[in-house]
Image 1 (tube, rainbow, N blue to C red):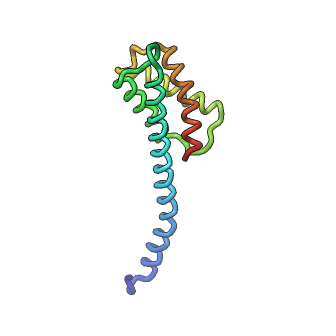
Image 2: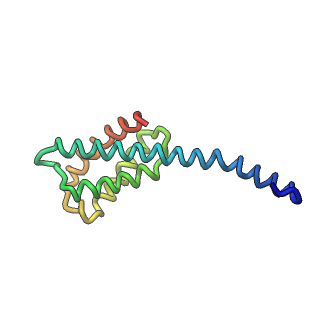
Length: 129
């Protein structure tokens, strides 16, 4: 502790105390998001394995879709979202999937079917956090 500048020391200590809870909260939020991402990815893999023939994704397609979903989860709110916000989120994922080089050949109907499954799995994983 700097005894020659007590005001500066006090201000630095106060700043640390005020910033630490926010930093801890941000870390907790990131940890929660990572848990949700892990859960959603595992559920997507299970669903894809169960989906034979029509709608089954290749490994490259699955990884591309997981990358898109992961980015949305990591940037999205941790609070419960309204139905309108969920629609916007699913629309962003669908738009990103249509632009992705690995998913461009995937029919829109298949993407829509997967997004319906994803909505259910997302709610399940959200509840697990």
